[in-house]
Image (cartoon, rainbow, N blue to C red; front, side, top):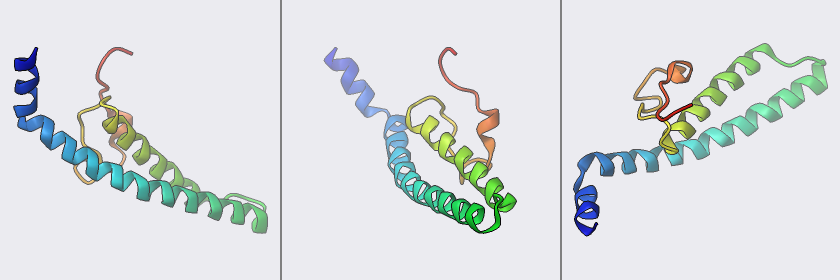
Length: 100
């Protein structure tokens, strides 16, 4: 058992993933902040114009998709790195690990 743990700790792929996870955890915090800004802008748009702003809707959808992709990566549901290491809206095409 101890040998298996030692082997796992020596894998460079594991350490690379941990570093990427830390980077994307920080990026995720910024994305959440941006999502709250989008929410507030949409509330303002609805209050002042009576309608949601189409440009903000599209940006919010795109940002939410990116946030989802980061969460899938952080929870080991995918090995595909989120943007900027893949296309912006690659989440729809992700091949998830494990059984569905």
